[in-house]
Amino acid sequence: MLLRRMLIMLGVVLVVVLALAAYKGFSIYQQIQMFSAPQPAISVSAALAEEQPWQGRLPAIGTLKAYQGVDLAAEVDGIVSEVLFESGQKVRLGQPLIQLDSEVERANLATAEAVLSLARVEFERGRSLVSRQNISKSEFDRLNAELLKAQATVSQLRAQLGKKRVLAPFSGTIGIRQVDTGDYLSPGAAIATLQDLSRLHVDFFLPEQRAPQLQVGQPVRLSVAAYPGEQFAGRIAAINPKVENETRNLQVRATLDNPDEKLLPGMFANLEVLLPGDETKIVVPETAITYTLYGNSVYVVKEKQDNDGKALKDADGNTQLTVERRFVETGERRAGRVVIVKGLQAGEQVVTSGQLKLDNGAHVEVVEDPALAIQAAATGQ
Image 1 (cartoon, one colour):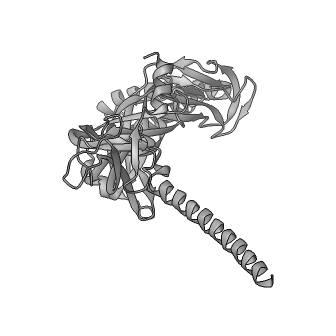
Image 2 (tube, rainbow, N blue to C red):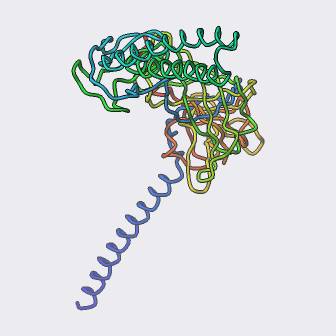
C-alpha cells in the first residue's frame, strides 16, 4: 500500500516536471523564432549628394557707419540768436544752421575797417611824398606797417564774425537739434548730428589667414535685422595695412550705396565677402550630418546584397535597403546645406532624418521627408 502511494506521488511529480519542461521549451522556441524573424524596415528620409557650383564666401560681422558724419558744435561762445534748420531736415553744403549774437563783433569790425581806411589813405599819401623825398624812407615803412596791421586786424575780426554762424560742412541729413533760440553756447557745445546717408561704410574684421583672399573692389553682401530676408550689395573700399596685435584680425572697410536711406549708421550687419570663381563641390542637406566628438558622419543608403552580390528582394519584390555609417570631412555650411570635402561621392544617397533609430547595417525604408512635405504644402506646390 505504501509502495503504491509512493509510485503515485512519483508519477505526479514526473508529470509536473515534464509540464514545466515543455512550457520552458515552448518559451525558448518562441524567443528563437522572434529573434530569427526578419526585423521590420526602419522608415527614414534620404537625399542625394549632389555636385553643384559653390562660390566661396567669408562670413563676418560689421557695423554700419556714415560715409561722412559729424556732431556739429559751436567753435566760439555766444547766445543763439537764430536757429536756421529743423530736426531731420536735409541740408546742403554751406547752408547756415545756427546764428550766434554778433553785435559786438560787428561793431569791432566796423571800427577796424575805419582804421584800415585811414591807414590806406595815409599809405597812399606817404607813397606820393616819399617819391618826392618829402618824408624819410623809414616813415614810409612805418605807414606800410600800419596798413598791414590794419588789414590783419580786419581779417581777424571777419574770421571771428564768421565763427558766429555755423554752416553745414557737407550735404546730408541733420539730426534732432539740441539748442533753441536764446541758449548760451560754450565752445564745443553740441548742436546736432549731421550724417551723409547717401553712402555708407561697413567696418568688419577677418582672421589674418584670410588676407591673401582679400582685395580692394571685392564684392560683399550684407543683411541687417531691420530688414530680414533683404540683402544689400557693396564692395571692399580699404584694407588696413596692419593686423591687430590683440586679436590677430585684419580690419576691412566696405562701401555701399544707400539711395533710399533705409540703412542707418550704427546698425549691426551680417555680411559675406564673395570670393572670385565658382568651384564644383559635393553638397548634402545639413540634416544629413551627425556631429559627434569623434567626427562627423552620414548614413549612406545602399542595396542589401546576398553572398553572390545580387540585390535582395522583399516579399513584394522591392529591393531591400540597408545603411552604412561613414565618417566624412565637412566644409562650409550655408542655407541648410553643407559641403562634403572628403568621404562621399556624388550620387550617393544619404539619410536626412531618422538617424537616431539607426545603426550600421540597419534595414531601412526610404519615405518622403515630412519637413519637405510641409514646405511643399505651404508653398502650394
